[in-house]
Image (cartoon, rainbow, N blue to C red; front, side):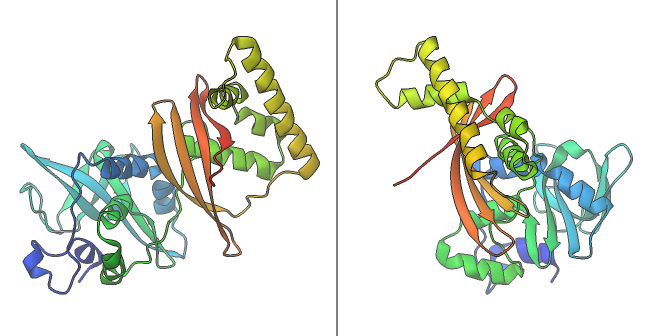
Length: 290
């Protein structure tokens, strides 16, 4: 049985004896919506890897939404490739259920706007596969091990390849870590929003939030940030691999959990407030939990 057949089973549950029941997550489910968004935000890594695959990358597949009248179905494509205009081509990798316009092993071309996921196997480890992870998150913990064994994949936190820029909350965190690695104080300061951090701190107290107090607090926070780096040096995030979990507070404020895996096998978890300013997403202070 091929990898995609293992992931999605046969046409119905009755044919899947000995396999864990598949929990299909509604398109309205926030978990699946985030999985699709995350796949598209990190698609650049898939494209660059596909164009120049490394020896440890042994499998590439991409998921697209096929429309058939009023029906739509997300289907994996094997042998994916892009043309010079960025259009996607591939081979239908799993038996369609709800659409009749394509069939297993058919070669198709499709607009990149229909991409909903991607996956690479790197040293037997699943990279990407965000909708697979969303399905896995929806099954009981007691069945997760059987799910992993059945599809033959090592499913851990993974690595989220967001670009280190201010376009996403996760990218802002990566940009700050890159500034630390480069020992670039100006770049590190550019990743922060001390005024918004001051407002957040004042909100948790009974102090007023007039403009003067906010400005004074912001200046103190920036000075403290700079002094800490000058006194203790820049943190070293070289070789760090991170996966991220979002918790939405509002459209301009997310709490991001970063699961950090270090080259020596160590692991740490940090939670950070990230705020969307007029110049993009910025990193505020960490969240300390009791």
